[in-house]
Length: 399
Length: 223
Image (tube, rainbow over all chains, first blue to last red; front, top):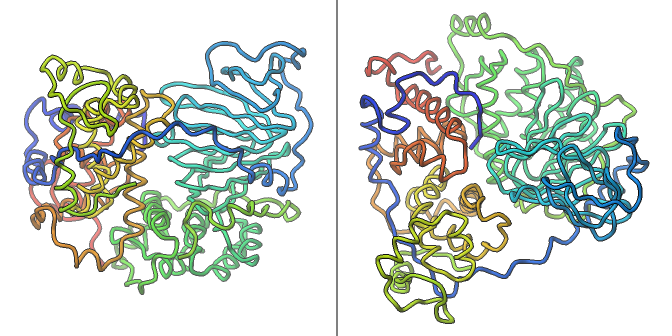
């Protein structure tokens, strides 16, 4: 469940729905009576032989993390000048409150170097030849690859925010969505309950590969793509790229790399290259493309993953944000169940009578093509996934 | 991991349900002594983190208390994704998984959010692996929902994820908003917003006017 902070649209008098105080809401009460028989009331039936397993040893350093960093062709070297100046040797890395870390060899921190300590708010740690593990507020952990720097921006009950300044990491989190966030110079990964690999170079170019669950990748412009398990998205200082499934052919990868929302031919190239299994790419593209491309995009995506019954084609073409989000959620949910779903012939999508369609186009703001931009033509190619991930990226591969 | 997949198996295992209270048990974890009322009251008053720590040490009553507190929320999470007939078994699976992996939970206080994630993962995994023919061949282990209830459940399942689970917890499991917040680890304000927005969408989908209580014309007609 998404955690929200705003409640300004909750009217007064909603108390019965909240805690059954105040006057009874007839509809809520009716639904309570109707649905009560479905409630859970079975006792716990626990076999005697089920016991807590011994705590496992620390996660093995994911070989793919280092391989990802190496294969990315990103220069993951060089100490970045730190505002506070490099710490002198010998001082500890323990400033009290923060996230505990441990490493197989001494890491640099803003106050010196140590093999274990605390990553405090406003502080950073940087690995050299070894790796480090950072415990994130008891909701998960981050494994930091060699020659990588990680900073802690903030930690609170509503959000834990880190920053990968350069290098690579592997994150595994079990928490409510959007509690765990990792920034980079170019994009922010917002955890929705998952495990993923994140890498970024000093120029801000990077990749996000999701192993399980899904992650929102947000650009400073506000553009967001949803990256579910079994897909990889690139990002650059120019914006976030479209997620591409593991095993996508080079034609598709090239088409996604060349995507520019200001150039309709790049959208057409993606549509032409897309096939079964590319619905994640297409549904994210739907939100980023201009209205004139959405018609063809709608048909291409509908053929792979039929739009839900409550989604209207005219609204999608007009760029209605709620409708776009609804379809994206449906596609991602289906992808999480089976990346190769949607094989049944799609039915006719819902369309409006011409007069109502015109009303849609008149009242719903047409999305100006956002400056999502992908990398300039000479940007480095999408780095290949580490071999172990490529074989089975979390078990979501083709059946 | 033992998956409780049939009525017969569950009935057989029900006889092995732990019946007593605290601390060390036999090698198989089966406790013989019936609890004292005082002990039972003590378990029900313990904070979640303490229950988790006790369960890790083999205290089955502590784990049973965790089940008592969180089973409905887990059922709601499962019901948001899986067929009603499978939901009961899936809840048991989730708690078997939870007990086995309890030592992986670094912060016992994070148990609410953690077990919700375990439940979602299990429900998604079940749905991914289940073949359509199984829905026809297996006898109904649970009473079949009424047509109206099924229609409402389908409408709730079509809602965005943020609202789906919260509404099922409220309308099906009978949990209050504060209780939902406590059991899921979400902020009360967030739960309240999710309930309000979700209920609003649900009313629209069910064709009920929010103010008048009468069926209302839909804003968007089916094409």
